[in-house]
Length: 123
Image (cartoon, rainbow, N blue to C red; front, side):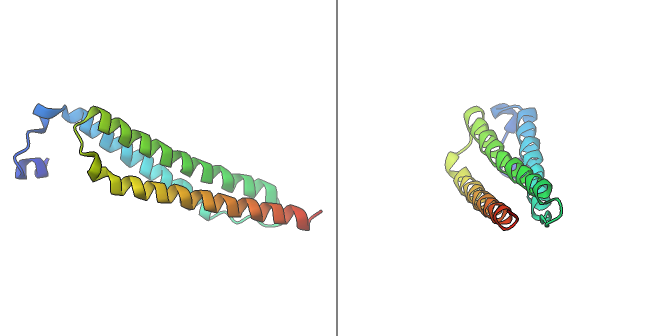
């Protein structure tokens, strides 16, 4: 609201403030969830005792973090469809989300490789 006042933008005339606040809160919730899942997965180190359980728990949080990336992209897409947003201004954020998704996929691949190695060593 301070920025709108500063630049003399009448937000309510363009679109309802509740809608802007809705998307703002939604994006913040998704970001919080993504951070929580990444941090949780990153703190799980499967050991020989109950390896499969810890591996599956780690993979679950990795997948949930990946799902949060997709949710974030979808929310941004919805915002562009509903609100008059310059899509070019969102491109740096979309690129960051895409990089995060690629990093999570590479991480999942390493986790799966470690699991296969564990199975191989214990058979």
